[in-house]
Image 1 (cartoon, rainbow, N blue to C red):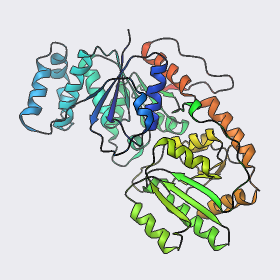
Image 2: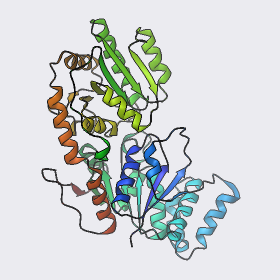
Image 3: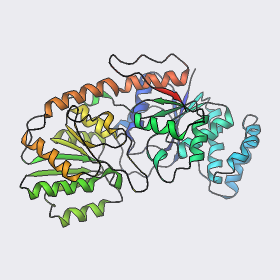
Image 4: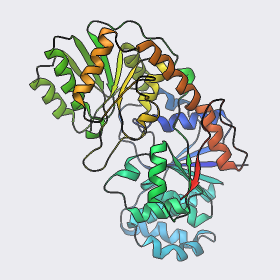
Length: 416
């Protein structure tokens, strides 16, 4: 009987709804799961879907130094399975901080005790490294879902990325853009790279055709208030619309380091009655916000530190719900926001173009209804969590992979 261990840096994490959706779909498909978290959550609010997760959660203790850390490593040395492997692996582990080595050993012991047959990690950073350590110490194979910061950020260690991905049973890319990037950076490692989009529980996102735009135009945006989300360009576009006499109301949900800077920009532009920063919202409230809006804006940009969005789940949710999307051509977004068909696609940082696109929805020159219906069809074709769960289960339990839905592109797989 297969038992899958999910390795996550933090669980539960408010911003990672895609992980909970994936776990719920896999449980619904009959998979036996366990969750291993490497850091305690610091979130004060949680999405209600977390209460539906049945998998047991184990927090792998972290010992930065001292006797406790040594006790963990010594315990691994004494294990008949882990001990010989640990001695062989020490030269490679010397590159890691001691607390990570300790956590890796503790995770390995938990994997053996819980009879885990396969590990599945999200992000090729801490969670990926710990899954790699536990796999090497136990012989239990692991798959790895890569996202964005873990493969693009300036802090990414190329040698460790290649080592982890080269040893993984499979490396999952969440967009074709990421797949192409991984093919380049992992060339020569033998990594097996497969495309599998993050997905949605479609039943929770019922489609409603857009109505004529409100006056003022309602615009929603959701995400962490950080550089890569590009919300300062949305504020700039709003100022352009207001200056041209076009009424607009913008609501931005999320929290982050740039909250004060964004509020200062809003105040300086005299937009306090036009742009609201709502703070973090649970997923059910985000859904209500997206339904409220005439347009959903995702003005993403590459950060100066290399940080960049992957394929924001909330964009997929907006498309599923029937709210037209305006987004920028960053990483995987052009794979879903097809300009003029499933939404409006702009170049990153084009605040003038964003203002123009929003004005088009306000005056009815953008084909909102046709875009919304085409967007929903695309989501149903490529982003169904039930199909995602069956695919992941087949990859991790050695069963035959399901055929793609009619009209859907076959899942890509290459060896780098």
